Image 1 (cartoon, protein in one colour):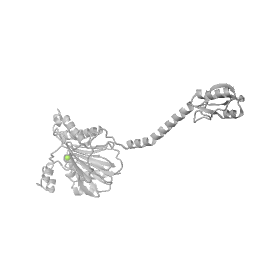
Image 2 (tube, helix red, strand yellow):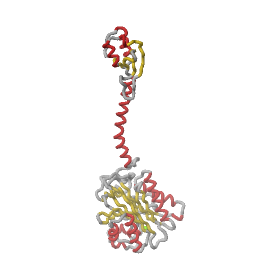
Image 3 (cartoon, helix red, strand yellow):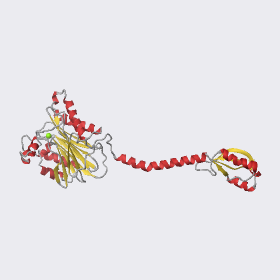
Image 4 (cartoon, protein in one colour):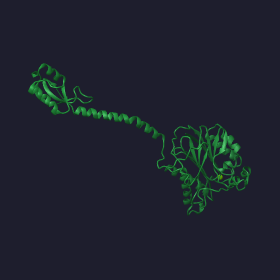
Length: 383
Ligand code: MG
């Protein structure tokens, strides 16, 4: 699976600064939006602190939910002793690939992740906001929530409490799916119907991001606007990402959307599961047997060539050679012992055999015994 990312962020038409932050790290495999809040520079500091903390935690091999909890701690530590940013907080919505056909969404607050599939828009995350609670309780309608005066009040954010519940969703993805992560500066300004229409365009993720931000600005741009668009391709192909398998189930919320995988894998210390690793295994499987065969052949040839002696004729003299008659690979036979025995003193049949090289033995002593037989008895010897 591959995720092709485009993004856009804008201060909007009203706010003095942009307190949204975003994270696009294709090498690490993480895409996120954080919408900061707090006086002075608090919002900007909270969202950027969260982004950096999550990036660092994921790079260390943490799961996405653990990384978001780390971000919660990082914001609280950053706020300690700094009155200007005390009480700051941020939403956080991140998408990380889980395997070759699923992504994980880690989510806190009222930024959102959407899925666009075959022209249909669907919200993947649940808002942690007052109005979302009221809608779930049936006290107001979704239409009333869109214009509710307290719709910006959120019930969960990073940096507020020491403990944070992180929602984690497993989402099965298909080729041509488009995932959108955005801050409420988009969704407060642009209706889901318009969002669906713009996001279904077959343009590239960068253009879609920019068009969505422009639409929010055209509608008034009351808040900072941040959009990340991820186009899903190559589903089923090995993901060249770090594995961000969730360890939720311990203290987070797991919700599965659309053909969930059976269970989220548990966290493990070695999370790097990258294409080069498979390539290395395949290469080793191919190369190791060859190395072993060549190694065994070398040892066999070496032992045979260095532990063989034979008797032959060298310039009319019977000599004992070390090696194999005619040589073996790169081993040429060498003269080991000159006997002083003249070949001419041997009978014709024995002479012919000596000239060919005979009496191959695995020790010098055994080869010399053949020579002794020639000298003493002048009788034929066993080849
Ligand atoms: Mg906002």
